[in-house]
Image 1 (spheres, rainbow, N blue to C red):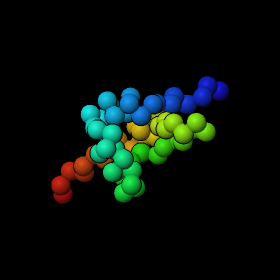
Image 2: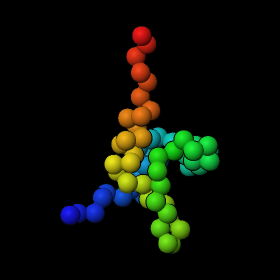
Image 3: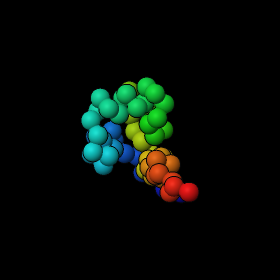
Length: 63
């Protein structure tokens, strides 16, 4: 089974069109996608986790 696609933080920031500072503020509030911290201290985000997080951010239509 292939390992899940892991994105580097700059890739995620580019895709979200977001600054690093904004991302870290969201992370501090617990509102960012799940993060994997590597032993080297680098951060990675699984593609599936980012896609799931993005789908949860969609606004629901007004009733």
